[in-house]
Length: 326
Image 1 (tube, helix red, strand yellow):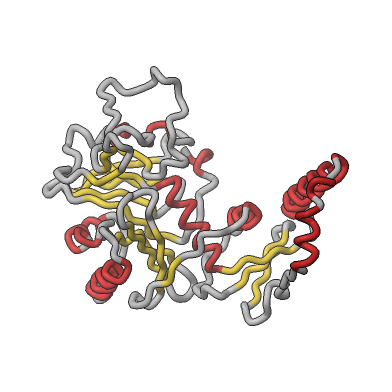
Image 2 (cartoon, helix red, strand yellow; image 1 turned 180 degrees about the vertical axis):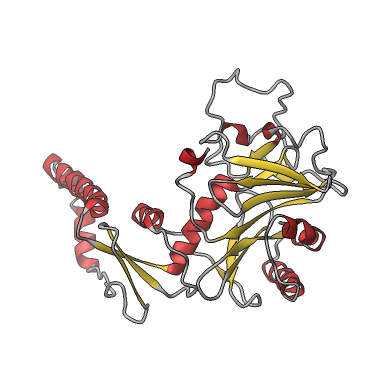
């Protein structure tokens, strides 16, 4: 949700069930404006709130040029100081996050230990997860190896390739080991969870983003939101993440009013499972569409003004039982 329209959509968020304390609203607003100024962002957005067992996380992001590719995510707990989210994590960590079914603890340095037997315990980050390993290289040996490249044999190449494959197999085996316990820091879990929610539930109305002939993506300057004849059609809501939202159907499977400048993202009507989005209108004014796969993710629009935005307010847990509930 753009910080510029944050004040105007507070009532819509309350109607949707997102409770933000009135005392926190001005603090968040001025904090986000400061974040935008310090990082020279063109726009900054309040992404949402992750509820925890102690202190909640507020998530925000900003961008300078491209509103999709250039986004940088931040989190805060005191609503004053923002920390940048980690961006480098492994496939193993992502699989670990998918297995966690408990609420966030509320401490970024908190370490959660997960066992494949579904038995779980927690530890603090005062003890390191693994000892620091420092790799040192002998410059003379490196130079000697470079000079011996011409003498490299086929068997040596096969040996290197086999070692690489062995490392990949070892990482996949770690996931399936029955008695192995793995640990992950809550800050990393938070970043991975936000990215998972972002990929599957962050949507924008059709026409909000515009693709120029040179490939640059920008916000449409005169977009005023969807009207009553458009909000009832899921084709008019698009996923914002390009990596996960490329059209998967045939080339002739396009809408009759296809426009390459605004239809470069995939609409939510193809989401699986079918029926994972639920929409409604309150008081003939506030339009709200909920994502049932990630409870707490929603899009709101004030039909009187056309102001709109995305917001998440939940525990960061995916509803895996949804296919059996629909």
